[in-house]
Image (tube, rainbow, N blue to C red; front, side, top):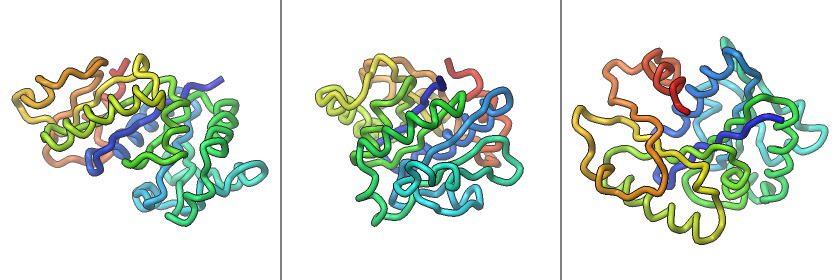
Length: 213
């Protein structure tokens, strides 16, 4: 049975999708990997990977096989999210069922989630064997992630024993906001603010995500 890796942040624009795709690219060198976009805003995956927005909510049963796509020049598969109208169909049970099905097919199921909580996002959080909470160095991002940690824990939406913090776009000095925040889990990856960044295919990013425990 495959492992589920969930990437989440309550703050948009912190690099969740870039991290997700970098993880997929590294892991797919040796494993069978699928990326699932649990995002109906819609997310950026279709544009980045130049694949169709087929809609996660419509992929149950026989449609699952038809909805899985393999982006050009990549060795991982992808299941895109959809548009706001599709979100109503993506119940907790429906998304949990899709994730369980994909576990049987792949070594790794990597879930890229939208920022605000929905039934589908909660399903992705609860399914996680490993949960990566992403922040950047800004006080707005750190405060929002820290506040969401209490909410997730208090409502049983996530197992924080399986969580790790990813700090993206770090400057040369350690962020004072990250340093003083008392996250109840370790920082597993610190990603610098790279110059001439090549996106999720950047070799420097691949090296860092490849070292995540």
